[in-house]
Image (cartoon, rainbow, N blue to C red; front, top):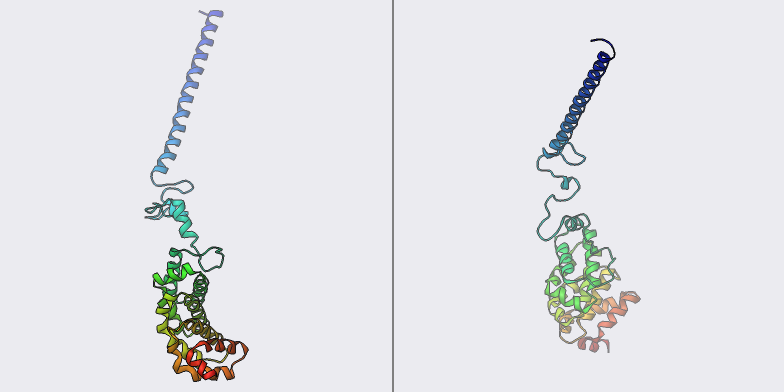
Length: 260
């Protein structure tokens, strides 16, 4: 049994044994790798998200909410549209708009004016509304949105700057004849502010401008009859700018009789 033939059988047995061991090694390694991949997948399906291990999110919190978005887009928009609306709210008072504001934007401003308590915000809204009220199309829109009483309410404000901006906005709105019908109920209060307030003040000048616009026609001139003496007093004591606006009121028929 010895000799070259025995040695050949031994060599063949060693080769077969080595091959079997290698096959067993590959099978074992492949199974471990598959287990690891399966473990990764199962951890993700159990609540983990990309970049977050399972259990890292608080209950009721989604990946979208961690990114600052609602996990489920609301009706009428995608995540991107909803995110752009909530993360970048439209600032209608920053003065960057070259075009006239539309009805929806004006309605938002009126709501903000009615609900805001911060004097800075109120003043900015009044300025924006006043600028837009210089356009005839918006004079009608603001009236139809019920904006005139909202603006006029601010002439009662204790802040003199807010009072002035409210009078300026009403002044632009008063160019519209239909708006004058709604503004006329505030004439008496405007007169009280103009003639009892500080002489030559911004509020007094704004009030005089409004009164001038309101009395261009004969419809509301009679409402100033009881203030002719006050007009004279302001004319005698006011500075040049104030005198100019008081002279503008001399178009009243009753005032013409006094000026003569």
